Length: 274
Image (cartoon, rainbow, N blue to C red; front, side, top):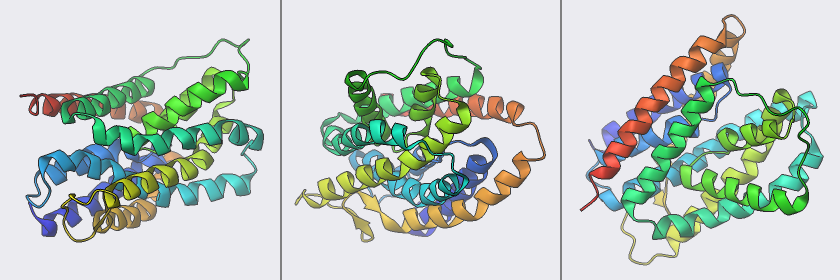
């Protein structure tokens, strides 16, 4: 595969991510990252040691573009709780900023294993209907800080806007689902911004980094723009379909698909173990 196949693959990835995002209310990163890793693995212009970090960095830039429209819609609807954004946001951003330097130091098998494990977790969230203890309330700031920082770090390492981390966390503390989703969409903008910026700066700071034209830092912009374009075009269709069908069976089907993708990612990690 070369650049003439990578961009069509990115266009298809964006369409699928946007459609499922609108249909199931999920973050596109869980689709974009494994798809880009697979596509970049097949592109001889990218060295094997760079494909994972480029996929993650590029995904964050994609998520930023898609999250902006979702956040704007939530703000217009008045669903955002600014107290939650103010308490959790700074620490989530801090974690996202730490992701790039951590990712650069991770051995490739560990990096891919971590992404595979996260995808498996996201699949289990899709497949279950866990409900929180009704007596649990918003934690003190001393507990928010480490939880949110860890959440931002995981989001930055997995190349997502944080929805698969933030929503279950807020629901755990009895934030209503619609509020958790709205705040997650809003927080996804600074998380993706910080994460993408960190990968961009980390790549530009590495004088020995050799990546194809169109890559700025670790972000491969041709693929990013392709994903953003088709994702934003397909998302409204997913929303319209969701209004007409029961999404629960689809969530379970997608959960099973994510389990398969997680297994594929873990298997690929073994290929880099010497």
